[in-house]
Every structure is written in C-alpha cells, then in structure tokens.
Image (tube, rainbow, N blue to C red; front, side):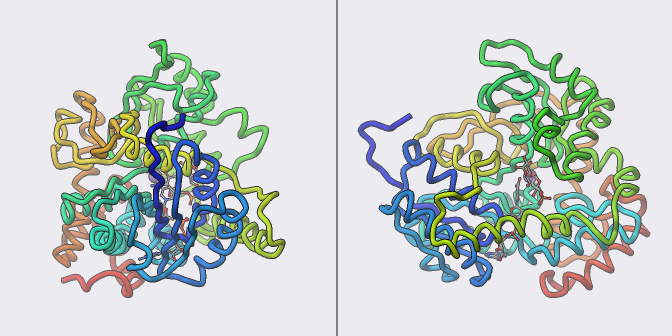
Length: 447
Ligand SMILES: NC(=O)c1ccc[n+]([C@@H]2O[C@H](COP(=O)([O-])OP(=O)(O)OC[C@H]3O[C@@H](n4cnc5c(N)ncnc54)[C@H](O)[C@@H]3O)[C@@H](O)[C@H]2O)c1
Ligand SMILES: O=P(O)(O)OC[C@H]1O[C@H](O[C@H]2[C@H](O)[C@@H](O)[C@@H](O)O[C@@H]2CO)[C@H](O)[C@@H](O)[C@@H]1O
Ligand SMILES: [Mn+2]
C-alpha cells in the first residue's frame, strides 16, 4: 500500500528507548517505510547509559537502511518531545530490579508473583502511573497534536489512571497479548496472520475472552480453534520446531485448562493466574522468576546483538526482526495516520461497549482506528461468569488508582485483598507491608 497524493513523512519518538523491545520496533519501522514513511526517529529514556547501547546500534541501522531519516537519542524531554507525530511509549519504572521484587515478594507469601497481575501488578501500577503521566504531559507541552500509543504496563491500571487524570489526552493504551494469540490462532487454522481473522473480544486488559473468530469469508473458525485449544492450549507447530521459553510454553499450554472453565469462549492466557493460582505458585521458583529469565535471555540477546552491531560497525547481518509486538504498534500508527478504520484492539473507556459492565471501566474491545484515534465497537452483554470476574477485577484496578491519588493505605489493602488470586486480607496485608518497604523510592507515603 502506498499513499499517492500524500507526501507526509512522520516523526516518531520511542519513549523508553532503552527497552528490549526497541530494536524490533526500529526494524519494523524501517521495513515498512512504503506504508508509514518517516522523516525523524527519536529515542527518549531517563537512563541515558542504558538507552545509548540500543541507540548506537539503531543509528547504524538507520544510516544503512534509510540515511534520509534523522535519528536522535536523548534524555532531554524538550528535545525528545518537540516536533513529534507519534510517541510509542514502553517505559518500565523501576526497571527489572523492581519487577523482580513484584514477583518475589508475593511468592514469599505463597501468592502468584507476576508483572501485571495480582499484588505485583498493583505495585508496578503505582510506580508506572506517574512515569506515564509525565510522558503524556511532555507530549502535550511540546507536540500537542501527537498521538501516544502506550505499551507501558500494567496497561489496565495505567489506562484507568490516564482516563481519570488526563481524560482528553491523545493516549491509547494497548497490549500485544491478544495479538500474539491471534497470530497463533491464524497458524492453527492455516491462515497467514492475525489480519486474516475477523473477531469479537471483550474484557479488561490481560483479562478477556474471544466470543467469535471468523475468516474473511465469514466462515466460523471457533469450532476448529476450540478443538485445538482444548488439547494443546495455544501451543502451535512452530513452538515444537523452533522452541519456546519454558514459562511461555506453560502459559500457552494452560490456556486449555482456562478454556475448560468456559467452553463457549476462547480465553486470554493471563486468566490462568486468576483461575489456577495454586498451580501457578506450585510451578514457580521464588528465587528464579520471570525477571531472571528475561535478564538471562532476552535482555542479554538484545544488548549482545546491539554491542555486536556497534563493534562491527554494520547491521547488515542483524538477527533483529519484526515481531507481533512491533508490527502491532506500527500498524496502529499507520491506521491513525491514514485514517484507515482498521479494526484492532485497544484499552478504552467502556461507555456501553460491554452493555452490562460499569461504563467507566477501562475495557479491551475491538475498535476502528483512524484520524480520531480508537472508536469502540459494541460487544453486547457479558455472560454471568465474565460479568462477575470483570466486576471484581475492575474494582481492584480502580482501588489501586484511588490508593495512589488519595495516598490511602486502606484502599491499597482493599485492592490487594479483593484481588481474586490473594487468599485473604491477612496475607494481603503482609504482602502490602513488604511492598511498601520495597517501593519506598517510588510510592507516596500512605496514610
Ligand atoms: N502492553 C503490553 O502488552 C506490553 C508488551 C511488552 C512489553 N510491555 C511493557 O513495555 C515496557 C518495556 O518492557 P521491557 O521489558 O523492554 O523493559 P526495559 O526495562 O528493558 O525497558 C524499559 C525502559 O524504560 C526506561 N524508563 C524507566 N522509567 C522511565 C521514565 N520515567 N521515563 C523514561 N524512561 C524510563 C528504562 O530506563 C528502560 O530503558 C514495560 O512496561 C513492559 O511491561 C507491555
Ligand atoms: O515476561 P516477558 O517480559 O517476556 O513478557 C511479558 C509481556 O507478555 C505479553 O507480551 C508478549 C506477547 O503476548 C507475545 O506475543 C510476544 O510478543 O511476547 C510478548 C512478551 O515478550 C504481555 O502482553 C505484556 O503485557 C507483558 O509485558
Ligand atoms: Mn499486555
């Protein structure tokens, strides 16, 4: 697709330039210049040293593949956010050191320790919100017409905070989990990729269900998908042929157990933490959690490949390649830039999209993406089981934001104890008290 009679070229800022996901996004942008032309690519991070390692390699990539694009990496907000059309945000406030504690502290108390789920996710939420709000404010100050696509987690809690604190901002919160699952669905039914599927999906972020999946001729793919998921979860042939990290293998496999609980829908993988917390804890090592795996594998691979590119002075033979995470965010920007009305998921205020759910809940539903951002599509009524689950989890997410805004210990304790994966209020309190100590450099003092 080219855009005749439209010679616009865009300026993109990656906020969280030091993220392990940055090289994949750069590759995707450079591969897709015919669909989404660039004039500028900038990186912004508050850790200049970490960002430089990725930026030095990216500069070589850009110079070799598209020397006409201006490239800049900075820790200066004014330089970063001035003259920008799209901000791709992917910051991790507290970095992996704090993610590790989000996982290990709950596990110490026999509770699921996870980046975006349960007490770990809530703790991360209270760190992430001020960081993301700061990015939104920089964007509004220096490039008021820009759009921000925000991946920074925990997306559900961050989205609730942006809805309340910056209701008119041009930020759209997004997640790649359903995208990755839909690429798997396409593979299961023998289609090229997720863009060959027409789907209905509803829920909260990391907490949703597909109710319908079809091909472009309208053929119902649910029976074939259900048969596969009941047996293999979302594991596909590529996992067996190319290998997959053990923790992701277990997650994709456990979708079979989650599916069993409601065979009328297909589930998001993250539901395993809510439905089978005991099994998840049993399979966890409190001394070696997902953060340790990421630091030992993805982080080493990404930074190692960047160092290799810099040492060789060329990226011609780089192993970096586009993936579902990077193609999704670039597809979203392209849809907004060219007003394509492509149907994709976003986390947005419900306002009736799920008719029997709190209109102020931040829900994840298909939207039409165009020049006005994301326009939600009506998904109808949630079933009784989903209504119960969503209502409880929505209250947890709202209480977490209340707690931060009101500096309220009680609201945070309520959030921890209401969460389905925490067995009782006493354990919730023990975890919370440890979390307060661990997050002393990030959280406000709670009263
Ligand atoms: N929504 C999704 O589906 C999805 C998918 C993948 C990753 N993510 C999120 O993307 C983010 C990046 O993940 P990662 O594993 O690559 O993390 P990472 O730690 O490798 O990178 C995050 C970067 O953010 C920077 N940073 C932290 N606080 C900042 C601030 N206040 N301002 C500017 N920069 C800041 C860090 O210095 C670091 O370089 C995380 O929040 C992760 O949860 C979300
Ligand atoms: O444990 P991590 O850091 O590897 O991943 C946590 C993220 O997991 C999801 O993203 C997946 C995505 O679903 C998959 O398709 C592929 O792109 O890998 C991603 C992770 O590497 C989830 O959506 C994110 O919110 C999590 O941050
Ligand atoms: Mn996600």
